[in-house]
Amino acid sequence: MSENLRTYTTEHADDENQAESESEKEELHCPECGGQLASDTEHGETVCVDCGLVVEEDEIDRGPEWRAFDSKEKDNKSRVGAPTTNMMHDKGLSTNIGWQDKDAYGKSLSSRQREKMQRLRTWNERFRTRDSKERNLKQALGEIDRMASALGLPDNVRETASVIYRRALDEDLLPGRSIEGVSTASLYAAARQAGTPRSLDEIAAVSRVEKDEIARTYRYVVRELKLEIQPADPESYVPRFASDLGLSDEAERRARSLLDTAKSQGIHSGKSPVGLAAAAVYAASLLVNEKVTQSDVSDVANISEVTIRNRYHELLEAEDGVALN
Image 1 (cartoon, helix red, strand yellow):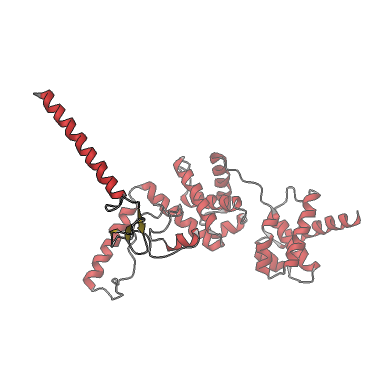
Image 2 (cartoon, one colour):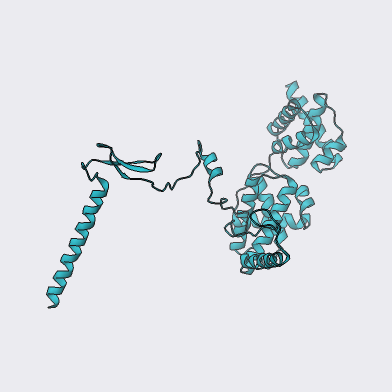
């Protein structure tokens, strides 16, 4: 009895599979002439290529109603939300409740609704940071964003700094060190990696920790995470200094030339790259008759006038030595 039942069940399943395959074939071919079917997305119809029979109409268009001509435009018009980013502790995947007490039509909420929205904001903020690690990350990334904004650093540097801090947090490098110190060191390392360095004095000016702690934490983070950071090139500071001083392109080119000469003769070895860049900009401004004072350069580069004077004479001597040879 059981064998007969098993045989019937198997045969019944085979019949169902055969019926499904036949129905799929019917869907792929015209029911009138057996021709190939094609989708007309412009009119929302499925038609037969051979006889023109409209098999299905009023189809749902699941594509976007806009057109894009390149990948950037497509990303801008996409409605799937903002891309994930390492600059937020939850990578931007959580929901934010706006601070405006208005509804979807722009009308102000009643006092009772405002109280309700404030409670929702409070609970939403609590749910976004579930544990101490996320609270730590939220505070640190906020510090990185604040300092990067004050220093005028681009988004790619902020993203890199966020990744470095996440790695330091994952590898348990924070015990015994402040959140502000590690976040500042991460930003300093990211700026140097990206080729848009800022001097230690500039970093310390916007940080909440002292210069010595930043330098100490930076060396520790670079060593433990095995970051590959090349020595800062004095030429990378020149465009920013020249721009802040309002110098011409000719003066900037002359400053680069002075630094190239100094590097070819080994004068840059053991010298502060910021001091060399500041002295090169000052010397170049005098050579092209766009005179700026040592005090102006000192304020822009955040370095002493004595350093500028010393490096300035060394750069000009190297230039004169090349000219004589």
